[in-house]
Image 1: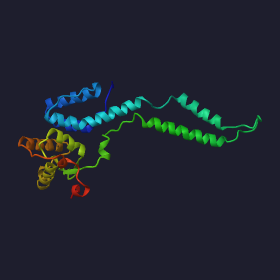
Image 2: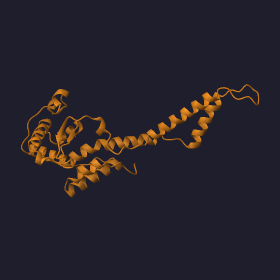
Image 3: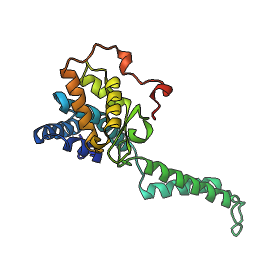
Image 4: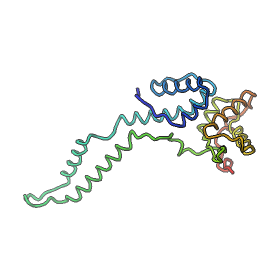
Length: 229
C-alpha cells in the first residue's frame, strides 16, 4: 500500500468545474483507488471524470512498484564495485616501483560504469509533473478555445465518453461542437471549462435518445479525415 500519490493539476482543473458534492465523490474515489485499490461505484459525470483519470493512477502506481525493486545503491557499494573493476584491470610486472599497466584504461572504464550506475538510479522513482500521455498521444480532434488556442481530444478521452454515453456517436458530436465553436467565437470556453462543455453536450444528446451506432463510428479516423483546418 502506498503512502502518497501524484496528483496532477489537470485532475484538479477537471474536478473543480463540478458541484461540490460531485467533486467530493471523485476525490474520495481517486484516493480509495490509489491507496486501497478499491473500484468506485460512480455514475454519470463522476464516472466519466474518474474513467479518464484512472489510467494515470495505474501508470503512477506501476512506476512506484517498479521503483521499489531497485534504485541507487549505497555509496559504499558503488565505490567497492568501482575499486574491484579497477583492480581487475590493472596488471603489475612484479617490480615495486614500476607503475601498473593499463591504469588509464581501467580508470576510464570505472568512470563510465559509475556514470551508468548513476543514470540508472536516477531513471527510477522519477515522477513527472504532468500525465505521461499528454506529450506522446496524438489528438484525434481539437476544439477551439476562447484564447484562440486548440484543446486536444485524445482517443482515451473518446473511449471514456463512449462508455458513459453508449447511445451517442461521440466523434460526430465532437465535430458538431467544433463547428458550433467555430461559428460562435464569443461563446468559446476556457481550457478549464471545455471538458464540462463537452460532457454537457454529450449528456444532452444521450438524454435526447442519441443514435444507434456501430463500434467503427467512434474509432480513430485516418490521418487525412482527422486533419484540422
